[in-house]
Amino acid sequence: MSVGEEVQNAPVPPQQSLGTAAARNLATTTKSAPQMQEITSRWLLKMLPWVQVQGGTYRVNRRLSYSVGDGRVTFVQTGDRVTVIPAELGELPALREFDDEEVLGELARRCEQREIAAGQVLAGAGDAADRVFLLAHGKVEKVGSGPYGDETVLGIHADGAYFGDHALIDGDAVWEYTARAVTACTVLTLRRADVLNLAERADSLRTHLAGLLSIPQQRTNKYGEAEIDLSAGHVGEAVVPHTYVDYESAPREYELSVAQTVLKVHSRVADLYNQPMNQTEQQLRLTVEALRERQEHELINNREFGLLNNCDYGQRIQPHDGAPSPDDMDELLSRRRGSKLFLAHPRAIAAFGRECNKRGLVPESVEVGGHHVPAWRGVPIFPSNKIPVTDARTTSIICMRTGEAEQGVIGLQQTGIPDEIEPSLSVRFMGIDEQAIISYLVTAYYSAAILVPDALGVLENVEVSRWR
Image (cartoon, rainbow, N blue to C red):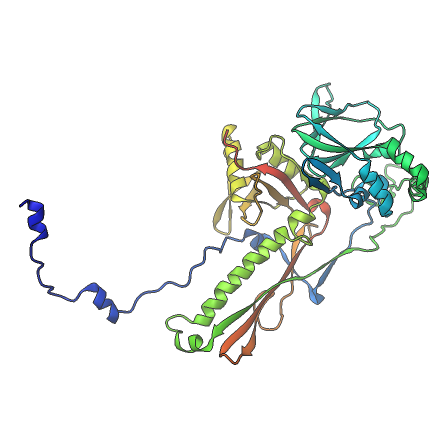
């Protein structure tokens, strides 16, 4: 018999003391409060200045602007066939406020689809402009000449953009820059000749285009606002110009949004199982945390007031090389004064760090509320997993100026509501039903407003999976 077999066959000594398993029946365990993985830092809720909104509505009064056609065009894809939604042609300045659906449908059918290879020139600077380009997919850069004759990139168009729209009404229009594909692109083209040909048969379109040519050009500043006539540097008894500041006749109003749920707790649980922790209190705590997480998600992604969907298209830029580089972050910062914070998905922050490493740069950090946060040019970069990352592994980086006094981005809330337990969040007792279940209505009211367009900028289509 081997030594191992002898050990196995050895008699088990009798137990001489109480085992731990039995002893636990008489012991009091030490418990943690209920934990929850969904809880995040919620930096956006912390950093936004919150404005009290009485009456549940906040009106943003602005100086009158004459902006036209500053949106993006939406397309429908069927297999490899791409068509523009007819009503979306109203985003073009020449067709703004034109609502003849039949004519718009005919114009949409006259749009010609083209597949453009990367590096191909769509239009050359100085060439006659006879068509508008609708960019369904891809990236196109605007290339011009620098002051010393070198080539310079003036801007980048991405999905949904259009360019060359002045060609539809100006027979002498020329391209002021070269449009060149950065990636493989799918574009639709609408020729001026097709528009004029249709206008000969469609009275509504002919009248609309004639009206555009007869309307005098509005005098505006570079932001599209009605110009204020001023005089400076004059001497003697020069006539001082008369002026006034006009306002938008229909300013935008933001209504407080709501997030709600009904929390149910059985009375037996609330009565008998409240030691050492109050069951109702813990249920409410976790429910409030979930509501606050949803609140931040809505502030970023909601179609009506979310930051990503309400950023002005003139404040959206594209990365020059896909990954978020220091140059892209500088471009984002340069679009506004007094930027207070960046907001980015953690993967986007990591991608930006990799780009800095390639260049031998070490981003600084700043202290915010006792936390060390990465920063760029002194502006903190806060993480938020509420910013979506697409299946193509791209995301967005938000940059904003905040505060009502700074004409920035503000949060909207109403404090002092009935049964309030936190600012603009209430818990209302709804009663006990016939099954002895206690119900509480948990409600949060909130929204966000962008006071002027340049308060918010977005770096779109940022790649987060490039490692070389």
